[in-house]
Length: 439
Image 1: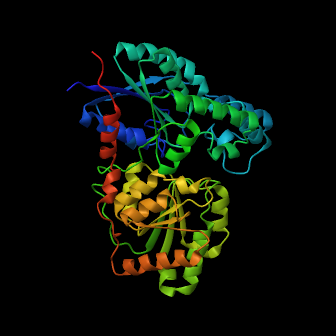
Image 2: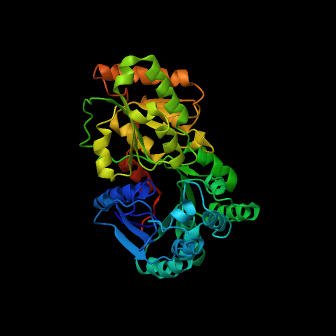
């Protein structure tokens, strides 16, 4: 069988941590099992915020990783911030992407980021990346490239390479929206900037040979924007990660949220429902704990700490390595996903939701009851999505799981449907899209 070669162009790659790296790291891990030779092109010195060395173990020996230095404007913003009397931050990206109250300099730099750096600050890497890869692809006889965004500058690299070599097969992967992305609101993007985003997005959608995205909602959205067929390739979970995960009886009933809580999503209705349940049920009040594993918006944290009841049961753990997260899953009783507040929340399927399915634990989602996440939870029997305006239903769901926990019945009633989302099966789907190298 002729080997299939593919080059993945991605900004996020280990030791980068967080959700952005998981999709293609795990797909690359399994592609060699389906006759594929993966090449990965990524920056040598990216300005990522989360570092996780443990993910390096998932890079297969068959993968060739090509790195090229990148220049990003964050360091320039970082140095200029001293002119405004700002105390130095540990992360230059905080100056533009801070989730807390913004200083004058942060407001200016956010406006610059949203209106002048289009589609994103990695745009300065496009030209050098194309120069490097145009020759590399020919030398190694690689017929297919995959670009994954955000950052959507990766797609501009693919577009230029395709224009230089029309015989190249280009697959554009959208992990998030582009012109319809809610982040553009936070970046104060104006009319001209939004028009530029739409123009570039249309070019990518029309010129790529195939377009893939992560949820049925986004499939429909991109099909409407590009007037073309878009393929669904969801996120998933790696069965290897969960092989040693054991859900053990715990002293307390632990509700765990994994991942970022930013300025958009709003867990407050959930927290108030828990507080009300504590007032109604003495046994629940004495055993409940809420643990937030990942970054938390300062305003939400302040909301929790200002309430003596909620503060007494809440723990903010910050970011943890993915390997350590596996152990924490085993110390959980109920897993939480919050979609309330997101733009187009009915189309949002966060990566952690797939890992939640793999644990077998019950899942409570707070958000649209008729959307992609709700459909997945219903289809797998893993849990339910409940509207944030229905605190009675939220309380009833939590109390039902709590009663089962009291009887040491921790597992959710899942069938085999969740195995459709294993990273290995998803890698098989990617391999089917690829063409053998031309001899």
